[in-house]
Length: 477
Image (cartoon, rainbow, N blue to C red; front, top):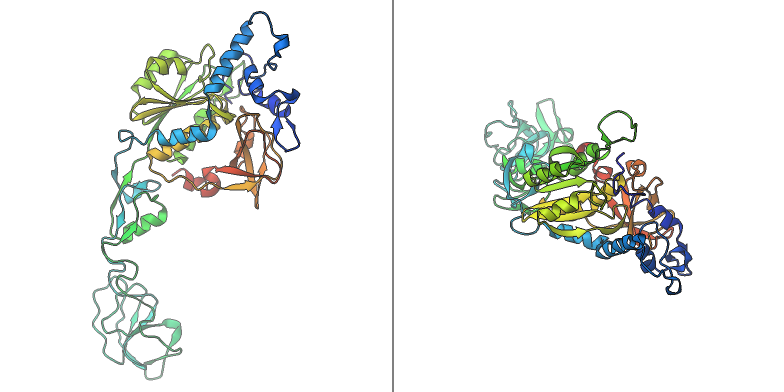
């Protein structure tokens, strides 16, 4: 698995475990850092650094480490809260230039897209009176004389029935004019003279689907913004459509960074397998995107600059290189391109060094941390709301479940924890470190744990993983 977030010393995310284990609970059940230091004091110390000394123990001159801690504190101050970051991402693509122009697609290509115009019936449904059952179309009271030739679905308009007459009819077949009702096959018998008798009381109009029962020509069936599901495809076909006006899938290009990444075989000699290259494209497709390409660029700043400037995608997603190490090129290149940095760091663990930038009015870049679970955090924090807006998808209804066990919290950041859903509870999973995928691979959702942690039984907001509810086949179409 790729483990890039910063290359100097410990990963910027790895000290979260130390911070979480250092938390103690006060009488109100809220968490505070060990040693009684306030979140602001811990913040000033940076990741994994000792708490800031008291005024009576200050050094006469600042050390290089102090300068590094000051930069970290300044960056932390600029970092955006997790809820605000998701709101910014959702709003980033709402400008007229960023909106994707509707396209006309065949029914076979429309699954998963969003309707760009209302679905209006092009005909009455049904378009003629039809039989709802196999049986006999009858006229007047019984018994009835039965015609020799029956009426099948798709046949020409049958001759009218006279009183006392019946005709065999199939489900979906056109009802002869002057029909009183349809007698189901199991509710009729014939006598020795071939006359048909009902075995149950009948109602006028029984088992007849009248023309326009479901809708009339011109009725609005679905509003613009509805997601095209298999049922929507069936309705559109029944209503007379061959094509639909839909919002196209946002185009996404994935740029995988890191000289240390292998594309096959086992890790060796300081090289590790690329976990994000195989994982991100299908996940992005599950979020409604069209992944146009996945490119592995190593740690080449020139190649990254060229790839970003040449991209025609609506969204460019980079992996790693978002911190401030010697080969973290994303920030410098964004400055060269005069990009607008909308989110520069988020108060969330894992995934703190994620970013969102506007490259052009109609093009954005999401920079994901290199650690796998941190990248998942960035994907759901920044990429998902942005793609949802681009694709005109409705935001999912938020929901929460109580946690089966307590969860340690970060002193001042939100935590995203993999959970499985068991009955009416969410069960936190182990192996939830920023470089780990073992937990998320078994998860149904991510629990949103507020700063300070959550007690057992406390409700936590949940972010569903698409395939946990839709199934694998449905998710990636």
